[in-house]
Length: 117
Length: 106
Image (cartoon, rainbow over the protein chains, first blue to last red):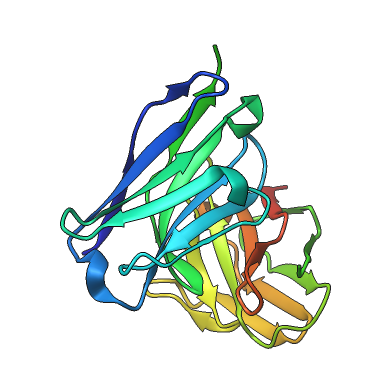
């Protein structure tokens, strides 16, 4: 069965770039019908979508984060990545990758990223 | 942007009770609504999509209804493992999440 797993640093310094990768196992990211997504959840808060991308590289971003976000896909490695630039303490959150077909039917376990010097 | 308002913020119930959770939208978007369950320290889990369709493996005590601007998630008889936070999400116009309803043990 398809599984998603986030990886990347758990601590990032202010003003630097947060970089995470989501590896898809048990299936192919090139299946075509899905968008591969990033979301986050601030401590004790609700869910916020960051953006999503399809296998061909068409990406869509939350307007509130668009100026700082890049999502890319590597179909040869069945993974997709998130770059969030110029981070601040307000970007401290659990980051999730997820598979989207309108709704999000499959999620990674999430990874806590703390922004602190 | 469509705003989703979930109510109540917290629902205090006992195992075996019926839970009724509401999700109200600021404008209509047909039936492109999903419900998720999230337990502490875990990722959200898809329960319902297209307002009333149960996701794979979801028990039939969970049901969704509604259309337009008013949607409901009903849990007919609460099991101990159902105490969690529930979120609605619309995908009819871009996408947005509601703020969540916590179902806690009374």
